[in-house]
Image 1 (cartoon, one colour):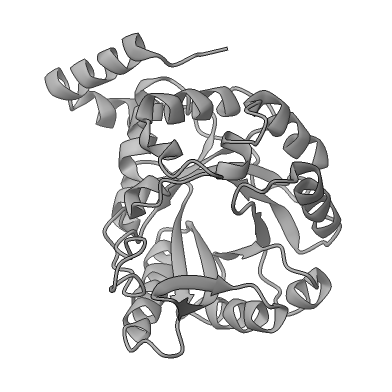
Image 2: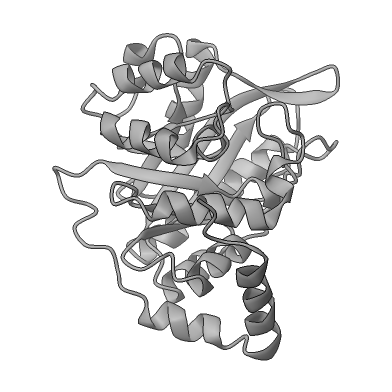
Length: 294
């Protein structure tokens, strides 16, 4: 069932044009999530920060996430599920959802570095062009997320490492979660790709965990790889599993998540395209299946 359509988007555009101060007011009035750091609680988060990096594809549709009406509709439907704790996104998406009334009582994580535009020569130089730690704190968000791709052959990598370390410290000063999504990445045929070999995943996780002058607020967002036991044993940071790309076999994808969730390190899931754009198009069923695993 469609929840967000042309009429709702027309109202969004009107509010943005006529009353931009409304966003700040709604952030101040928003009901905060309760007990989301509970020892018994595992988080179910929806990721929606891909468009800001120019990564618009889902499955075989190269422009799936380019349709903002469709994206917002899927996000609102997912967030309406009681088992979905919140969303990860850039300010444009977060504020659309805020204006639509979809963020009450939800955990909201602001995406910080989106400067590594997909399929560019400068992709590894992932500048912090999104939320700052100060803005995250001022908006009452629960934390900030950063993408950390480490290319052993790209001299731009250290600048991203340095910026991520500074962001970890900035978030810690506000007592906010620093969610790091690390990969060892390499270019193949001119395109940057993440290496999901377990050895490289472990290297990325251990590098990410050591960033900043404190790890007190650091969480890792890690991919599901072939040997999850080895990957998860490499860190004592709380881990959120990365949902990843839309796969042709959703049942197999969910089985791999379910097995990884058995580890005490794993504190939940962050799922984006694979749940918002399932192969069969049934968003509610995909959300139900993911929530059941938790």
